[in-house]
Length: 620
Ligand SMILES: *[C@@H]1O[C@H](CO)[C@@H](O)[C@H](O)[C@H]1NC(C)=O
Ligand SMILES: *[C@@H]1O[C@H](CO)[C@@H](O)[C@H](O)[C@H]1NC(C)=O
Ligand SMILES: *[C@@H]1O[C@H](CO)[C@@H](O)[C@H](O)[C@H]1NC(C)=O
Ligand SMILES: *[C@@H]1O[C@H](CO)[C@@H](O)[C@H](O)[C@H]1NC(C)=O
Image (tube, rainbow, N blue to C red; front, side, top):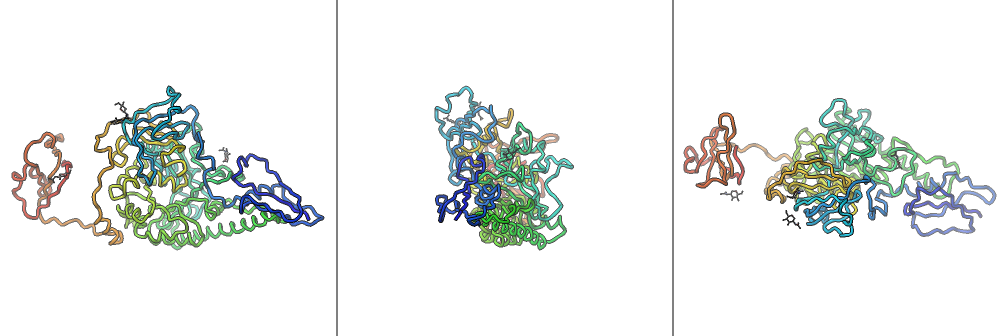
């Protein structure tokens, strides 16, 4: 009996993509037992007889490979972690030694801080803390920066941006974020609208942003594929050259995928936006999703049936591998190879998508905006696969009906429930230059400092499937780092320098020295009561102002006071130069009526007068 064997080449084999495909034909008697690559390597029997030749297609090896690799999950190649140079390294880039820095690494849940030096070379981080002497042999080629203890963090990673697709400053005719040609369009690509001339790249870099996930807009249920970019200019000046680890097939449909594959990104949206654009309702949107995923499921079933035959050598009449350019991205979703970034606000919408994930069996990487997510943590945990992260604004809510129950305390409540929190810009909705400000505000309203910093660095990096190279300061990671003028969570923190792929991005940055008080994470108020109220009132705690029953308000414990004097502003009180009894300022009927000691100013005050401790603040 003749037997024909075609062995699937599996991705562990080095350089397989450069090998000429070889048919391995073995003529043996009896059963062929192939062992080794458990479950992947199989023996294949051609359906032939003693007398006829098997009809094996000329590209049988490619088909078998494709089939064997169909469900391999995205991951970096095995030798990635020992790389000595980044694929994005620009030859000629000088190594950089940052001395004496307070390095927030992102490690250990974001609590690790290393005091010491940082060495960047060949586009990657080569040393953290102590730099081995041999690395610095060539010291005259190294750019040395004395950080004087300043904070250094990984570059900011924006999980949700429209940078390049939607211009900022706004330019009419330069909005390529939304297609209005259908509710479900997984075949669209944000890359096709990426304008390389947008001023916002440099502006955002000046705020510390180094990487952004550029998503299509939210007009559709499935708006298209997203692409990750690094913000720096490239020598090629093209959109494609800005991409970070694009899927291998991004520039063609016949390209043989290198194994293991890279993560793909997909934008989905539910709720008011798709309803508004398509004059439909939530019911129409969810049905459109189900229709789309049903197409994908059918195609996947066909592919799997095809491969079952190919892998057992049943070549007779097999034909071509079933493929469809419009649905291939959703098939990859069903094969677990896509990070879905899902714009979704209310419990009703989150519930709809959670049901969809369980019906078609695919995970959601993150729900975006998600202003009601903090009210339904247990619903989120019912999503298929890993619980989605929540990517949101810190305080920007109530800008439309579906965002009305948003809460400043949501990040903290979600974190308390063990859900990963990301701050994102939705640039230009929030200018991504100020993305760190979102983390600062989330921190102010109760998100712990380690998680607040992670929310714009390591967490989004992991959620977009790039946690193996960005979002942390670790040896071998991309040399994307920010040197700050204060603790990054202190309001007003500004980068002194930003490195992308080891290249300094800011030319002649203005560097001022900030006071020591700003070199630590700020203390934050106790918002326990307010946090409980947000939950108790289902996101709508009573916000009525306190009724005033006195005509006066008294401010005390201020450190400075400024008054308008005819045509200029004058500082009339400064605590540093003042000796005497504590000063108060009395506002009566909306006007400043007295500044002085409480004795001098106490006329006209009654029992109901409200006093406000400004805790060293300022009155103007
Ligand atoms: C560190 O201090 C030196 C000396 O004052 C100064 O020249 C340098 O700019 C400082 N470095 C940074 C990163 O601010
Ligand atoms: C690091 O910088 C801080 C702040 O300027 C300084 O006090 C300290 O001595 C420096 N340490 C080293 C090792 O240079
Ligand atoms: C297109 O993608 C393939 C696979 O990643 C790559 O080998 C090739 O260099 C790319 N071509 C261009 C022009 O980027
Ligand atoms: C004034 O404010 C500070 C905080 O800045 C606080 O520590 C102090 O107790 C306050 N003083 C009074 C008299 O309330």
